[in-house]
Length: 180
Image (cartoon, rainbow, N blue to C red; front, side):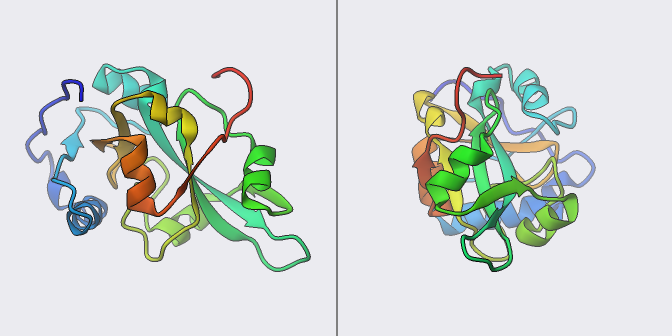
């Protein structure tokens, strides 16, 4: 793996923030060492996170929640897509991979209900219940990627394969065409 920033000391109790604590517990339960890094600034977008870490947006695993509507009726259900920060997710592609009628963006309330996190700090782990998860296949092109760790100022280094393992997800193409 490439060199990474050293974990910063707790700033304003971020080490004890409930979202960060859930991420650390989920990582520990999966046998992943605590590598949570506290950033100097909020990183609510992939571009902000990449700038803070000195990496390209393609190395940011953005956690995006969508609502999938099944064929033949039934209520929509939440789906987590871990997309390269260089991509705009193609909802038609995601719907095809999932075999559902449609996929649309979730509201902030939907995101919090599904993941327990607010937008900007949605981690790929530590949710109230498992979510169907797709991991952007393009993330596999990077030895190290960064994912949110439960707060807009916390992230952790990981890899495509580790994200698939941690989430029980499926690697998939989630964006068409060139990066945004």
